[in-house]
Image (tube, rainbow, N blue to C red; front, side):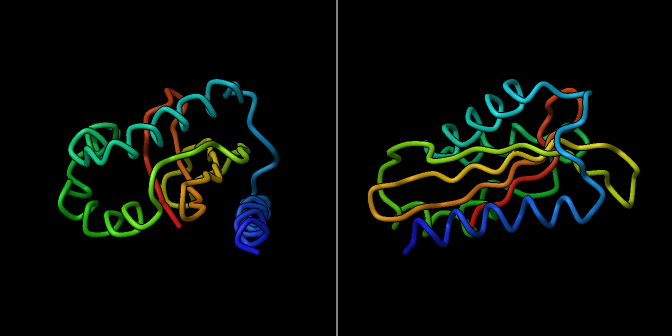
Length: 136
């Protein structure tokens, strides 16, 4: 049931992105590179080194969240999930920011852990700098 729910949530996120003006992954991006960058970030998140994770944010966003805030938001969920097992699914699409007009790649990764599945949504600019990250 959890697996079905996680996959459904990932699909719902991608469908919502499609409704927001995305049409697959823009030609500006290489899907393999986008997904590799997102997986690299998730593996770093799994180390629980929140300072290093915050250091992955694009320079102009570096102060948007502190390592302590990130730990407060994600720490308990990651600890309860247990050890990372594998990437269950991965998808990428593009989305244009309504506020800046900037085109972003959005990677959605469903990850299996010992005790749970977690879904990460990672936003990147054309240089694959991280501009947003969410975990559910």
